[in-house]
Length: 231
Image (tube, rainbow, N blue to C red; front, side, top):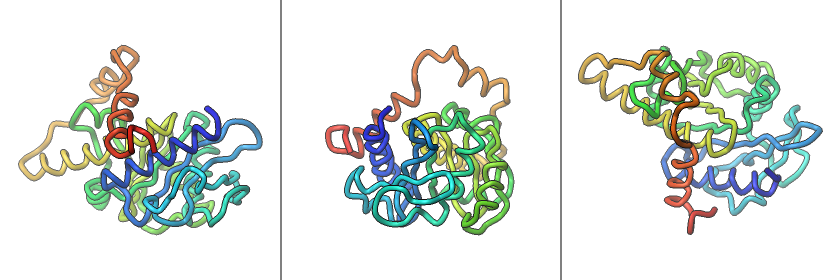
């Protein structure tokens, strides 16, 4: 995928996350750029809803330095750079502040799936225990370690970070994460929810799944939140 295509997708993801209420004044989205030296395209340090178009995005290297664009990188750019260093399989990240997932993170316990879409976040989503902003490379590395090989991490009192192979996958997983937390909280209020086992998660998300869940959901949300399906 070209840089121009990645920029368009990051901009579209911002529109979707804003429209779904997963980000407001804060939050950011990034995508790994192809080629060398390693770099990423990322939203600047202001509300995603204020982006005018893909041209407002920045290019940042893995040391957090801006190499292209106007404005400053997010204060928490380090969570992006350090995850990309650790996880060559990750192509995009969504930093969100969705309500139910943030509420669940305050419990200090991993979020386990209670529905099929939640299974795409794995058998559990861990909680990063430090509640402060991720403003140093050291904290970024700690978040990356907490994420490990997983799909997302809840930051206690500080939102979420969701990973994907593509922008579309990361964006849709961020929506699935909020749905999973909302359902789990509602079920727990009524009783004791039955969570999915690792075996059930593997069966639901494995190679035998008959179609592209992320692509189907991305097309829906993109059409819902952008003009004629385009940012």
